[in-house]
Image: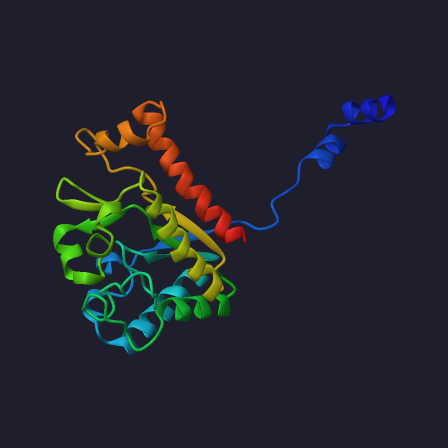
Length: 238
């Protein structure tokens, strides 16, 4: 042991070779946004499914040309998704109508096209926000506030999944279980897995008193978010 230590200390190059591993693959990723037609599908292609598919292949070809190897595709937008689901409605960005699916599966198509180019596809999910009142109303009875009012909170004109409600972790776990079971995605990314911005006045004081278990409000809120992440992690690993 002493001899080995002397050799390593006297040879910085050898020491580096022993303890530092070079990354096997450089991570070059791009966020591909679906909300409001910001990236894909474009608003002018709404309802034109052939144009949507052609546009995505053009985007991917351009990204491949500059050596992007990972696409982070916005898969859950605001309590709705871009693939057929029994749990949440279809987002309106493809057909132009809430809950109406296009004539193809956008997520399956995107995965196939990414893998064809040697790219990974990671599903990017907006976690807690459900959209403003008008957006939620557009989904009618299929919206989460309409189906599960007790696990949703309205705050400053928008709806959110309530992190303190046990049903939130259960709902997201079920949604993601279906996603990772049915689709060959290469990763999951959570966006907005937190309470709303500027939470002054956020109406969870009574819930904190009831379920806070002696924790401060801040610690209790953190524990609620941790519970959601843990539940989803366990489902994915299973």
